[in-house]
Image 1 (cartoon, rainbow, N blue to C red):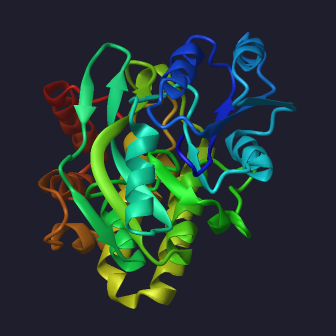
Image 2: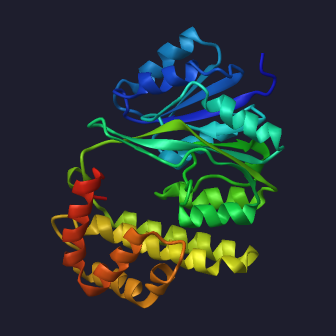
Length: 327
């Protein structure tokens, strides 16, 4: 029996078509000493009932039924009742490989780290899979880890595909009412850590639902991504001023990512697009003259600086060639 109890928090809302696969993948883990906290965040479909049915057959499963409060509120509810020495988060439409817990736990224990990170692959509903980097095992300092997430080189700010010592959450919770909650939170956990273990074996499957951004809507709430990266950058620079180039690159990328989504909606927010374009024109050097930035991003800042619609046409061509979603 594995000695350390691991808490797994799964926020659940309106995912009846995906939930069985998610829960089954967790119950098949090679590391067996865990508690699975399913937080039914006011689902209107059969998700809550599915959670209860699984709990009836496995004593490791705890179900919370609560009024809808959003992803952050659901995660916080799970954190509040967790009893594990370590905690990890899995989104309810995603699923994990059988050794997900084992890989993360082995890394965090071996190096007595505060956080461990594995790799993931993006799984599209049409069957296409985009893999991230593998064969990368290191112990990183908080500064090195911050640089990694700012460049999104091997991993990003997502809460999932990571394991944390539970005490990191002693005074940290996910921001209720905000989207992009991971960007507002993960860096805080890293800054509290002494070391972070990275084993980039692909153990997490991130599900991308929908065929393109054209099937979803853009709301002005998504501009919050820019605010999140501004806040993250400000706090990281207080501790690690040497990361100025990486911080400014990440803020620029947040603007590009937001603009990429805005240009595909029917009723374009032209004034806001121009504000973002102006920011990119003013700060393009943090990508264009940055040796660590990708060729793709360098082309993006050039095209956006010239003409947004030209960027849109080129982005469509790029997506068709690479099989990516438009956003």
